[in-house]
Image 1: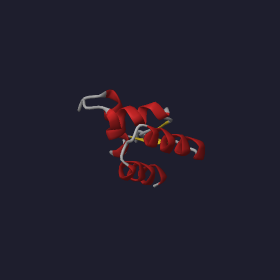
Image 2: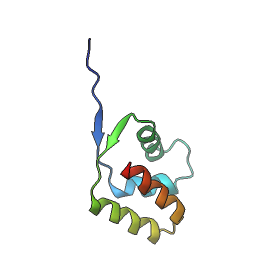
Image 3: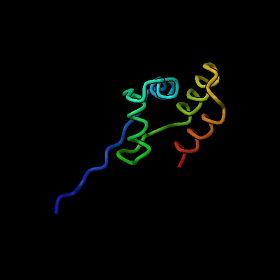
Length: 76
């Protein structure tokens, strides 16, 4: 039986910001986010990254509700 590998990734903060700001449904950043949410791979995060995501989202005036939803997804 072949063992299927589960990949892990680290996203730069800009990937998260660009995914939420993009109007293009086929944006590579949005596709990465969707694939992560579908479980194609796991994301590795640290407290510093979570703080930076929050700062960038608030600076770009991205909805605090979207930010909270993303942070909850990242912490699960």
